[in-house]
Image 1: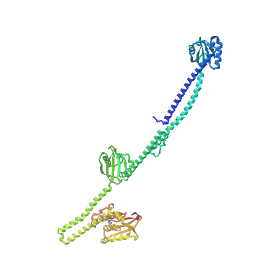
Image 2: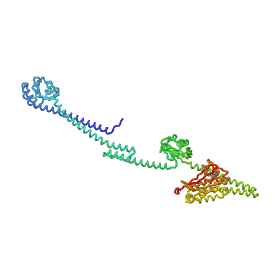
Image 3: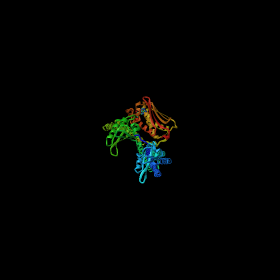
Length: 594
Ligand code: ADP
C-alpha cells in the first residue's frame, strides 16, 4: 500500500471530525429551533384562539352568523391568521378568509373533532378551502360546561417554513464559515504536529548518510521534544562509537600495512575479507579488487589455494613453504590459522606470508660457500698430506727429493695461507661494512694507484709485463686507502696473471660525469660473455686449473666487489675473449652521498 504523509492522514481526519461536529450541531440546532418554533406557533395559535373565544363566546349561535363572520374576518385581517368559528353541528359560523355559506361541514376535521370532545385539537393538513397546507389549532367554546362551538385559528405552514428557512440559511452559512475556519485551523494544527516530525526525519536521514554532527532542533511539545533529544543522544553515541571503531580500524590497518609479513583473511567460503599491502605485493594482486572475491578466482598459484583450503579445514595452525613463480620467483613461508567467532564457529582463516626468498638464497649461498671452502682447503691439505707421507715413507733419505717435496709443501701452505687471508678479508668486509664506510677519508688517488702498482712489481717483473698509470695529480676521492689499494692490487694482479708474459696493463684514474673511476685494462686472454654475470661470486673461476696453477684463490674479485660496496660504489667488467678485459671501480663523486 502506498504510504501517505502523516499530514494527509491527520488533516482529513481533523476535517471530518470538525465537519461531523458542525453538521450534527447544525442539525440539532435546526431541529430544536423547528420544534421550538412549532411549539411557539402552536402556543401562539392557542393564545389567539382563546382571545377569539372570549370575544365570541357570548353570542356563539347560528343566529349571529353574520356578526360572527364579520368578527372573524376582522380578527383574521388584524392578526394575519385565519380564524374559523364552527358550530358543534359542523357548520362554519364565521371564517376570516371564506364565506361560511360556501364552506362544507367541518365536523369531521380532526382538530374540530378533538375540540368538540372538549380538548384542544391540532392538525397540520391541506386546506381545501385555501388550497394550501395549514396548521390548525381548535379549542372548544364552553357555556355552562357544554361545548357550544369551536374556535379555530390557523396559519399557513409555509409561514413557519419560510421563517425556519431563513434561520436555517443563517445557521448553514455560519456552519460554512466555521467549517472553513476549522479547516484552516486543522491544517495549521496538523502542520504543527507534522513539521517537527519532518525536521526529525530529515535529520535522521542525515544521520543515516553518516552526517552525525548535525543536531535536531528540539520542539516545544513534550513528546516531540523528548523524541528529538533521544535522536540527538543517539546520534552523539553513534558518532562516538563510529569514531572509536574507525580509530580502531585505522590502528589495525596501520599495524597491518606496516607489517613486512603479508597478511590476509578469507571467509569460510574462501573469499577475501581483508588483505594488507605486503600480501597483495607478494601474491601480485590488487588488494582492492580482491575484496569479496574468491581466492580460486584471484590467485593462480595452486599451492597457495590448497594451503588456504587446508587452513580452513584444519583446527590447528598449518605451515608450509610455497614457491610463487612469476617475473621473480619467490619463496614464501605460509602460516594459516582458523578464525573463530564468539561461539567458536569457524568463520574463515588468517594467512600470514613471510617472504623468505632472501633467506633461502643466503642459505644456498652459505651451503655453496662451505662446500667451496672445504673443497678449496682440501686440495692443498691433501697434497701436503701426500708429500708428508711420501717423505715419512723414505723420501726424506733422498735429500734432493726431500727438498723438492718440502718446496711443494711450502707452496701449498702458502696457498692455504692465501685462501685463509682472503677469507678473513672477506669476512671482515662482510661483517662490518659500515665501520669501514665510517673510516673513509678524502685522499689523493694517484699516490694510491702508484703504491698498488709497486705492490705488483715482483709479479710484473716475473711476467715481463709493463704497467702504465694515467691519473691526474689533483684527483681525490673519499676512500679507505688500504682497502681500495688492496682492490686495485687484486685487479692489477689478475691482469698480469691472466694476460700472459710481456703484456701491458694500464691503470687509469679519472673523473667521469657521475663518478670517480679506477680502470685496470689488459690486452690478455679476455673472458667469455657467459662468465661475466658470475665473475664476482666467491670461488668462481673461468678456468679452475689455470687459476690454481697461477696461485689464485677464486676470492680476489669477490673482495674487490665488497671493497667497492664499502665505498658505496660498484665494480664493472667489460671483456671480450682474446682481446682483453677492463675492470673498473666506480666511486661516488659527491662526498655528501657517502
Ligand atoms: P683468482 O684468484 O682465481 O684469480 P679472482 O676472483 O681474482 O680469482 O678471479 C676470478 C676468475 O676471473 C679468475 O679465475 C679468472 O678466470 C678470471 N679473471 C680475473 N681477472 C681476469 C683478467 N684480467 N683476464 C682474464 N680472466 C680474468
